[in-house]
Image: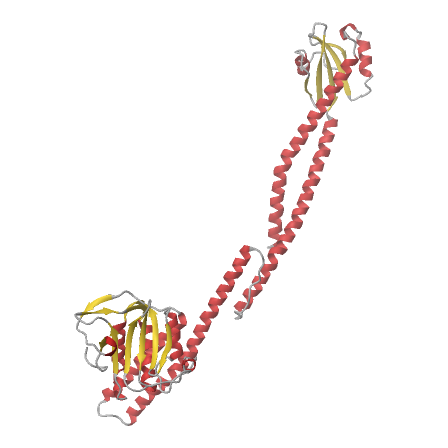
Length: 463
């Protein structure tokens, strides 16, 4: 990469130099040519001032002697009459184009092969050209100066290429050093160290790349943490219900009851809870709730009470459901935007907690609050006022639990954008706060109970 960057910089610089060098060289050539022609014209005028007032009356020998007095062997002068014929000096027998233009009373110039030519009109007494002085010199002087000027330009171009090469090397170091640092960070992230901080380079593109790399590392770390948590939580949370299921089956095997359906039903209920637990743990690990939608919380509470009725009946306990609504021919549906499976699992955890560790009737209640819905699970027991941190501590499980634990229940609630908290200690009240859905009215008979809500009979009563 370093070589490619340096070659790219040099190629771009060379292209720019070529694009500038060619017109610059042409400009130098034109400038030197014009300067040489102007010098030849000035010398021709000086020589014309040395000639007699009527040079055509002078002998060719005298005129040639004046021309020879110039002392420059590389320059040749010639005198032409008004007809363009050579009178004296060194030049073509017939006047060339510069001579013919000078007869029109203009100072003219041109080229003869590789020589420069200048022609100056010599006026007669009436003001019209009576003769023309032609000066010619080799173009080697201008060519030499042009070469020197172009050589200077070439040296400047070479210096620019050297500067470009040095700049390319510095640029490569400026770019490669942070890239190597990012590569090292990526290597360490690939080795499993997700705590790496990407260096700040001052280059916006590389800093954005570093931010993206750090963000990706954080996401990967969270995913791995959730997957590891799933493995840990699954092994921890499933151990007790599997042991309970095994105990039920072994007890039935060694001491069968008259009706085997009882054991089968108990086993199926345990298997259903295990299946829901596994699905919930997977959803929590992947952070992908599949069924997030508008939920009728009244229906979710009634379904939860029905699921837990057999356990409540075995313990001699009751479950009541209360949902706020207007008495009469219809009631207002209390809805929340959440995942049905997550909501059901949280309710299972709270109801099981109330049945195992609480006392008296377990009441399920949905109460609209400011912008949210509060789902409460209340029993007639009590807990210490400082119990909340311990209750929601990670891996805190209850003896004989078949759920996923209060810690994971809180994680599920937070995944739904809600909150699970211990709202009161006497009576023990756990509250799940969820985002409010749209309120709708559904017709149907309702029974009123305490708290002004709709009461379901003791769980298990036909609906």
